[in-house]
Length: 630
Image (spheres, rainbow, N blue to C red):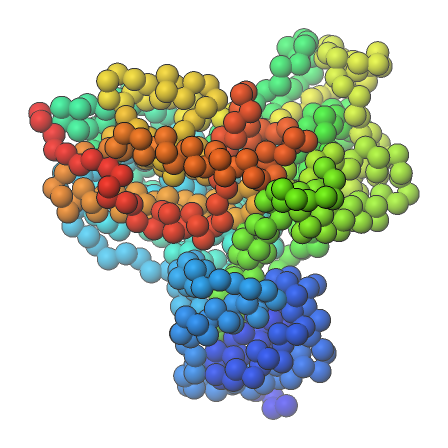
């Protein structure tokens, strides 16, 4: 091997072999490589491929030699759809339908182009303006795309900086549980994440970087909270009242976009006596620089997504930790949860043509529609109530083996933590030190119900009192009470709260609401991706739909766009029927996905590709267009 190639070859050893092989196919056009690797790939993960070592060496050697010839054009810079579909299937060891080709080409890219492109300056659209509520992931995405269309925007953000949930949540261990290279905008790919699952600070920096690169920051009014919004039907304008540093101000815009999400108002449990506790009581979403668990006897209430992060995050600092569990959760093996990305991986993502796209596709599939079949209830399933179909049962068996391996020395713990519902009935959690934490001598997992909280501890239903100095509430958010506490009033003087109540939000495609013209909800009702996916993907889908609605208004010279009667109810009826066939509707599952009457208000029953297609362009017949009379 020549001295010029040797450094490159060494770096390639750290990169995943399947994306490297797919990149080599595109560079050389040698399709025989697909036949060589296909028998050895059974899934999208590095541990689900068994490519023989000699073949892996040959791929890396050949790729290093090709990369030493920078002037050679790629033979398959843009594979035709049929070939790309075949390549997609080989890369994940399964069948990938043709409907995925256009979506994946848009979302992860296979052309090697990875640079951020600032949009060209666009002349403002006559009479069109937008107010966006929230400068988190969805709000920034909306602002970028609307700015590209020439729609003047003003964003109102109640915090002092961008980031939304990533600004507010700052508890120890706070991190994304979707791989970072999937949790990013398709129009702003980042190949330099420091970890596979980066922490809150890195994600917030990414959102800020996108904000600044696309020139959104000057459009944001920070420390300003929208109190109310009222649609004026004579002028087809939204009248928005906000409170900020300058007091109460009133603003007008043609379009109103709420981007506050589902997880922005903490849910504080109604436990008798909680107000009498003498020590600090802090919700994970309200953690700040003064929150100090060091040396204290801490009670952690909850075992969901934030709990499995904050527990390991504070366990080394506390005198004792009592974890109060109402029900166990599926905490799965995640070998990359705490790993940093090595220099070879970073180099491959930035320097090997096509590698980043193939790597992102594997994550997209493994954390998205590759899991979808495991969620659907098989009506003929004979495997018992612990699973809903054959694939779900296989995944449960693998998860259970992991539980047994991690807790082999503590059968008492194992009996407590195994969930009594099928996998994916609730959010599946990544093990970033949870089981290690449970095995610590100063940690106790408490499954007896809490009877009440007393000034210096927690009294259980069996009469035992656990003395504590601090309570940490990892109890989630008021997810079904969407858009609260804003008062949003549509046509006829009806408010969104009157329409939805406290926990029954409904919208068409989770985005537009009957009786509320020119109004769009991002991360709205039934848009949760229960089998995986990424909120950045969801935001792009929805703002693409919003963009299509604005195009319809512009082409018709309209100032008003509103849902026709029955469109929303028909969509929700179809969606509710479909949801009955999914694991979240299983009799054993009790979760925050359901409202007080049992209706699922959070998740959608569609594949990612289905929702992408539904929101790719609006159906003109779903809407009425009109012009202001005043």
